[in-house]
Image 1 (cartoon, rainbow, N blue to C red):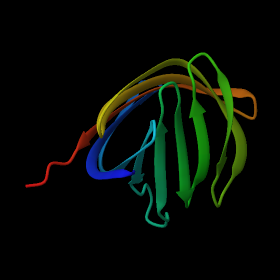
Image 2: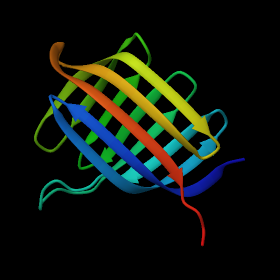
Image 3: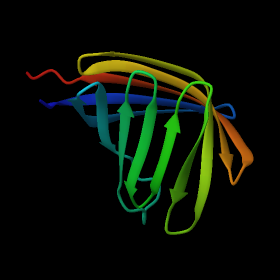
Length: 141
C-alpha cells in the first residue's frame, strides 16, 4: 500500500560559504522501505522551464532525480563515489558524488536527512557541499 501526504520541505545547502535555504510544498509517498519526496524546484530565471525533483530516501542511500528543464541524477551512499549525470538545454556532462557524511532519520511521513559530499564533474573536483533536508507532514485543518 502506498501512503501519500502533502508536506513542507526545508532544504538548506552550504557551498563555498554560501548558505541557501528553500521552503517548498512537497508530496511525500511511502512505498515499501523507501520514502519519496516530490517537489517542483523554484525557477531561477525568467525563461527557465519547470524542473520536478524527486528524492528517494532508503535506509542507507539517498537519490536525487530531476526531470524537466534540467535532467539529472545523483546518488549518495556513505563512503562511496557514485556516478550520475546532468543535462540542460545548455550543457550536458557526467558527474559523480563522493559522500563523506549521510544521516537519515525518517519517522512515518516526516523526517530529516543531512549529507556532505564532494562533487566531481568529468572526474574533476567541482565543489564541496553540505545539504540538510527537513520533511514536515502538512496537518489538515
